[in-house]
Length: 89
Image 1 (tube, helix red, strand yellow):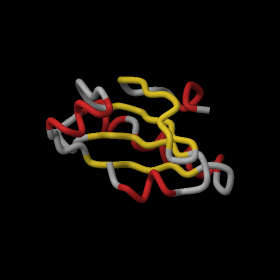
Image 2 (cartoon, rainbow, N blue to C red):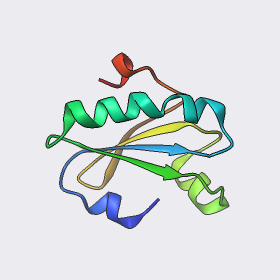
Image 3 (tube, helix red, strand yellow):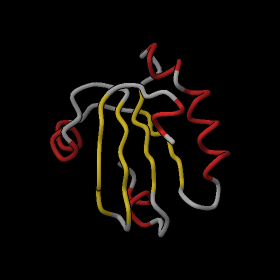
Image 4 (cartoon, helix red, strand yellow):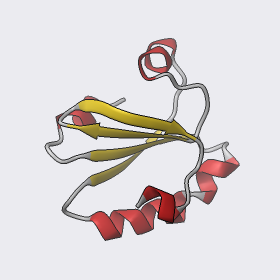
C-alpha cells in the first residue's frame, strides 16, 4: 500500500484490484459513483494489486478485489470481493 493513503486526514476507502480480474473491472463504475457521492467527506482510491509476500501478510490479502477502510492511517475494516454500490454506501 502506498504510504500516502495512510497519511490522508480523511477516512479512505481503498480498492485493491488487478487488471486481469473480471470482478475488479466490473466494479469500476460503482467505485466512480461512490467517489462522486462522498466527495469531500472521504477519499476513495484504487491500487493495482501487485502480490508481494510482505503486503499480503500485513493486510491479509488472499485475492482481489479487496476493500480496505482506513481512518487516521489505521486500518479499520477490510473485506474481500466486489461490492455493489449500495453496499459501499
